[in-house]
Length: 262
Image 1 (cartoon, rainbow, N blue to C red):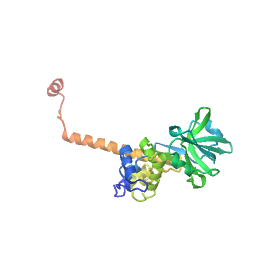
Image 2: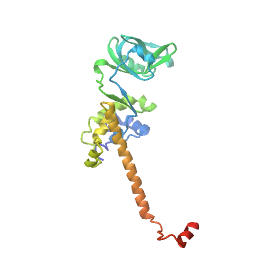
Image 3: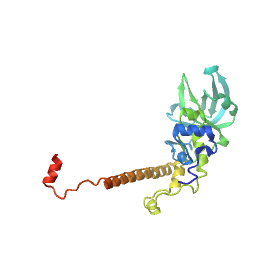
């Protein structure tokens, strides 16, 4: 493995000592290579936009374009929450934050186009989206393909390393890996099996332009894992046979029968 891939994770921009310690403890990410091999568990299509009016009928996360028309803090102390009215041409829905109000509220602007991403749920008699991803429309990344979703933990999320936070770190790293991920299979084998090269597979599994490329990248990496698992089993079997050759009976006769019976 290259020296670059063995670089401790704390040296990646956006990590630092505290986040690095959490990444090590929570998900076993110690190095750049560990982060690259922390693959997404699913993808969402962020090239499509829903309407606010459709959200109550969707049993999944959705992406919507619109503006914030009202922003206020509701409740007190432990029950305090930040509520924003979000609307598009089809209707209005509440966005709610129960945590991080002090730093979220100053970043939000009224009557400015936003892109939000979240899941609408029924609270009382109305639908809300709790802790949505939100970004100004002109600053949002143009999504032409799928967006990776990563598993996180409560402790990581508290430090901003939820799925989006991990994706941001991965993006920073993927932009630096050109030429640092060597191919481990012979070229002839890659060509005959029509596999993407290893570096392309790693990039595409994190940032696929479409579902087909995501499947090809995933297949390459799963094939690789299975290949070396099988190779290890064969080597273990060969070593076992060399160490324990056993006793060879040249013919089935009285000696063999006595051995078998006793």
